[in-house]
Picture 1 (tube, helix red, strand yellow):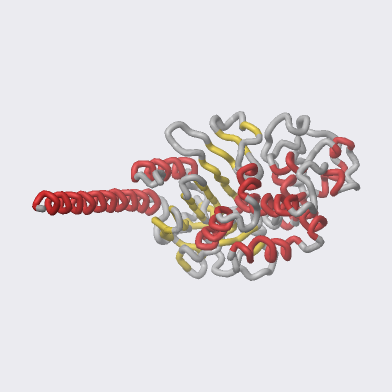
Picture 2 (picture 1 turned 135 degrees about the horizontal axis):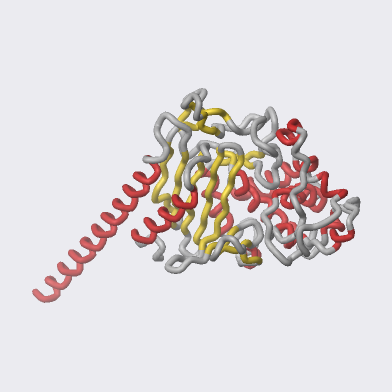
Length: 370
């Protein structure tokens, strides 16, 4: 009996020790993350909101600096950032949802949806090519008209494609990141669904995902708890607002016009995990490499997401976003159920270095282990 009691005490002490050890490891990781970001985003300058989700628990979440320099509103979990090209995954999921419902096929060619586009090569470009940046379509938008550049909506922005005469490469042969091809999805979604783009995204994407306040930018439209993007003014040692009216093609939606918060983005992640919008198979297909990126070793592109495969780390599914002063990073490790969000309203920080250091801290803490 004494041996049994002693064994029980030893096991209990071991469990307490292990728990205490993990708590210490977590505490160290949190301190490292806080130090990493607090050193880069001073309290009186444009800042960032950071969130790390593991399973269903937010294990790190904090705002740094200022969301709006005019009102001095601090950045936080409910701050709405323009997530720029991270918006592409929402348009991509909408397109794949419509494909699941039989309202379009990803093998449809562009000519089917834009019969007025004159060049015959549109018959060779499929929706899969649009989703994976492998269409060969160049970005030859006219940038001489400043009003057009700063105010153009999706349909105006891609209007040059009607008379486009040549491609940069044969569809499917190479990768070239291209915003106008995602803008085409604005119209394809409208035609296939019979709904206005914003209405479809609200009723079929945002509401089912629980993103009750997510909203696309339009001039004059009120955006809740809105952060502004900023550039540092080297001459005055201050910051200049840099978003709509200052940045090129800020007003397009399907490729980069969505405003949301890190807290709402967690709901998007949960909707993807729980197959609320598209099936597990469809999501897996979207996040499987379709084309290697020559100048980014270990990286490829799927349908609206980058994939990073790096020795010593799980496969990472992610996207970056840059629009005006906004610098955005959203990464998910699907098997490990980890989400990393770095939403910032200044674009002068080293995003790739921050992402790598964050990954290393997570690995050291053992958070990749299920």
